Image 1 (cartoon, rainbow, N blue to C red):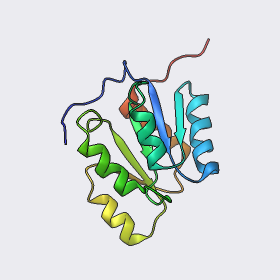
Image 2 (cartoon, one colour; image 1 turned 90 degrees about the vertical axis):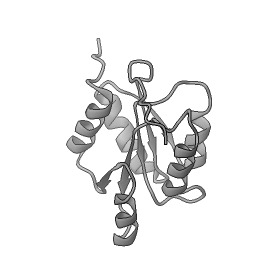
Image 3 (tube, rainbow, N blue to C red; image 1 turned 45 degrees about the horizontal axis):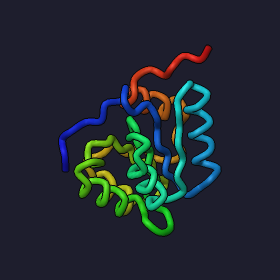
Length: 136
């Protein structure tokens, strides 16, 4: 895995990856209301396509673990295997069972448990992305 961190000034968006549309849209709306640029993806494959699309890299990825198709564990494996993407910060947000959560905590990423308080979500994103842009 690359130790290169992503420059948030060059990548001022948050990528939310969750197959549950209600959860994804709630996170997107909460972050957008704070003044963030947010991109959503319904699964790991869509997220990787976005990351490789040439539209810049996010300052943080909020990642669900249990998704159909490419799950969060496989997504992280592919992310770490790609030198261009390996430095992107990931925060795992999971409501999976105890075994999956234990496995997630072995990853080199922060893990938050669903349901996540919106204040915790905002504080977590601020740590990785800095303060939100002010709206005029």
